[in-house]
Length: 506
Image (cartoon, rainbow, N blue to C red; front, top):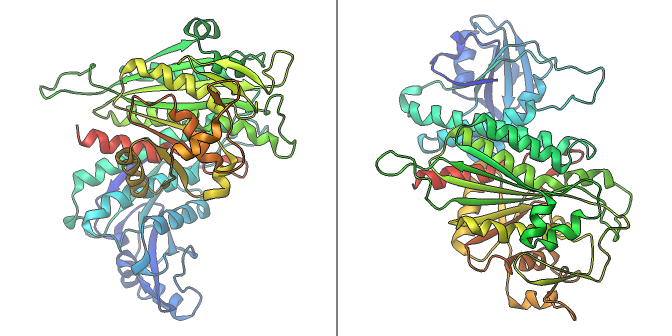
């Protein structure tokens, strides 16, 4: 898909196959956005007539398709309800763009132009442009690999962000924002593909293979894969306590992106990297602490953290951000077998801490703790991990906002700010010694669960034991990584924006 900025100043002369124009609802009476006014004038009041008839009132996500308007070059015009103009923010913008994209999904069009930024001032036009690209790309996604009779019938080749008065805009900033949006869409697509593939396809080995493909696509990315024998030598007994229950071998996948440039314009491979660590449980039965059978098929999504981190790295490489990044993907299956860990087993982590495995279904933290210890060898500036870690997070925050827990409030605030910019929001939950007490074990340094109370927080407190020397934040994406039976591609937008912000300060 080609995404671009449309420099045509007159919507009526825009030659796209379809143009989308904003109609706002003010006090139950629709008002035309700037582009809609232009079309209404060119078509001698056609849009006004429709509104006056009461058939269209501009309510949020309302649509009306018009064909072959007199005086308008585009063969289709989609009137798009955007609700109250004063309340029209990037969240509402994302909703209406997705609505329009879905309405046009079966249309045989090759080019599409969005005129929906009427209410955004110069300061946030770039943010709006990025959001349009992400929202459209999100809606345009599909995985048809397993549909024997299905094929991609879309003919769309070009999507434009269009504006009626580009003289007021910073064209360079807008073009960069669109490029960034397109890169994030690519990263989200990779994350969605990985998560949506079934567990018999997307195994730890498959993730390692996909990481190799990403590394081969970009000259400044390298990849290394630790096999179980390598992890055994390193003392990763916590990780191996999970992977040993499956016939599928576990993998610790490490990718390094060297994008930092020093003040002389030379590559700066020694600059401390941002470390991204992802939980990659490619299928989670719960192990011996077996999960209920209902909806267990969705446990293929338990590698959403790893998928999101690999997708974020791809977006970063597409944008060629001026930073260094190291990504560690802790990939394993959690299966019940004669070799599987049993409740009450005690294992030793790479950090030397002993862990009593009180519940084998709390396996994500067992693979993550060794990954968090291992990534310390890179002496990162910060460490951020992402994991579909606790059902408690869904109870706390639902499916709209992910949880962030951190040993550094500044880092947590940076993540939250990035999420607010890109409309992939996070909310900080507390941590402290009072919660850590719940992880006490009678026989080991730590138990791997802390009881029902504050489950999201005690899980983070467990991970915090392995990150004391670093600025660290944990994203619990259990409620946001998938919706229904489909991956959302989150937290690729949030982490991509975080990296964009970090690169801008370099």
